[in-house]
Amino acid sequence: MRTNILRTHLLASVALTCLAAPALSADDSAELQHVRKTVSGMFSGIEADDVFASEIDGWYTIRKGAIIAYISSDGRYLLQGDLIDLQESKNLTERNRNDARVKMMSSVSQDELIVYTPETVRHSVSVFTDIDCTFCRRLHSQLDEYMDEGIEIRYFLYPRNGPTSESWVKAQNVWCADNRNEALTLAKLDKSFPMHECDSSMIGSHYAIGQDVGLRGTPAIVLEDGTLFSGYLPPKQLSEAIASTLE
Image 1 (cartoon, rainbow, N blue to C red):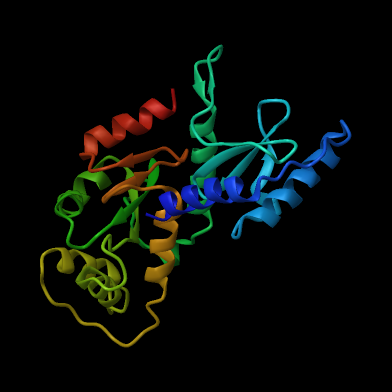
Image 2 (spheres, rainbow, N blue to C red):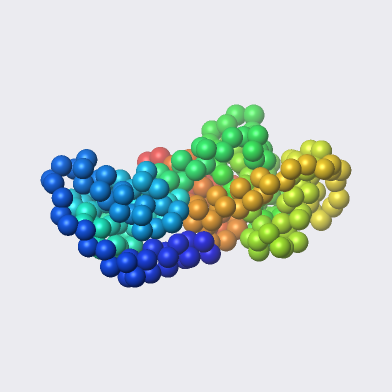
């Protein structure tokens, strides 16, 4: 998975570089700029804006997609793992992951997805789906029940076996169908549907976002607050899960 590759890359780069920059002024802004310059120079794919202040003095957060790491202000030490506020009983790292997922989900417009919308929208969730995945098919077969719960389903097409898989071709066919919503339903029933020539590069975009989100399988459901559920949730249970995030 891309997450593991980046994690390995981050740790290996730190070990090989052995960077120990001198301590700077206490001015937080100057220190942050120094850390951003250090990190963006050490790790390919990490931009200056991916680094920002953390909840711990002397440490900064690196966030690339839903991958979170922490680096010391002198650029020498890097940590990966969950940062817990014991006093508040909050997982600060997971909160950062959720914020990242919200940003990623909101960056994709409705016309770049396959969306099923109920008459009254109470909640909207993003679902990464593989056409051939058994539990993805189960979720899709209950669309009417999700609609009854007022849950809008925003589908990202995520052929979990990658670009060379049969599922990827099926996803491309659905994207180029005359009616994508109907085609997705028919594809999950192994039925044919009318389609035309089109640019299906959006499948690659969906796939890349899924890897950045940190999903470990399909279906993967991202709630409005960025909470990620890896796996199938029945309509009622999904409604309960959404409600629990609002408490």
